[in-house]
Amino acid sequence: MTDELELEKLKLAELQRKHRDPGDAAKEEAKHRGAEMRNSISAQVLDQSAWWDGIRTRFNRNPQKCKPKTRKQLPFNRSNQHS
Image (tube, rainbow, N blue to C red; front, side, top):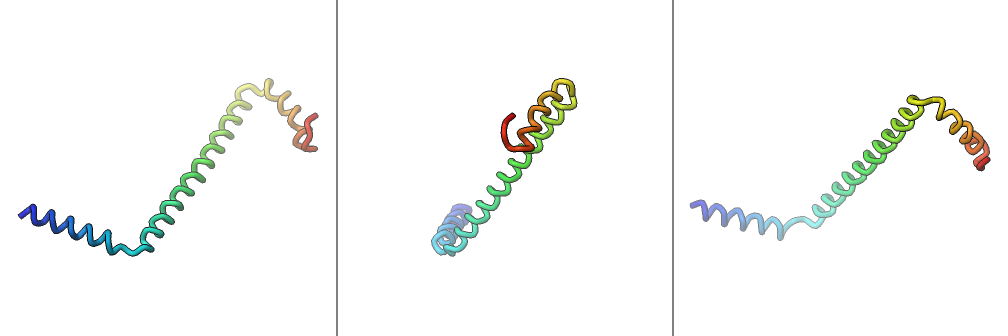
């Protein structure tokens, strides 16, 4: 009895694969690409926030060491050239 049920399930699955709409594969591919894009954007945002957290932590721990570095960076930021 269970063998017959298993055979029927296999036949049904095979028929469904054969008669699947070609648009379904395209829809699944589009969903997959959308999920990948969301994941990559999330990873970039998390990387940026982690980077900024590291910068904030570095500046807050030892402000005396960071002051000369920020002074060196100011002319570059104002004129887009190295001083």
